[in-house]
Image (cartoon, rainbow, N blue to C red; front, side):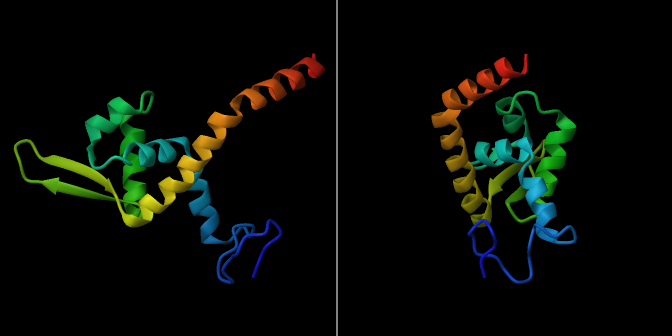
Length: 129
């Protein structure tokens, strides 16, 4: 079955419905920290501290919460190595890798079209003044 935007959808999931669990997932995936964390892991496993340095502006609490949510959703794994101190690595799962491909396409689109978007914003702002 296809919805109004021309994409295949499961009869069991329809994010246009307020009660659908896929709406919650879409909300999570729209979070900027989710996008940045997943894309930061594209080159392989990383520790919390490495992610915190790479993703400037994210608080310790928000990064931890984002990592837990992504682990719960099956998009990354958390591996604890019993060293002193403990070593914790985060890595994309196959499901996470498949999603990062979508985010990278979106990023590419934004990079290519940013000048056009900036021009549209400037024209809009000029009309509103």
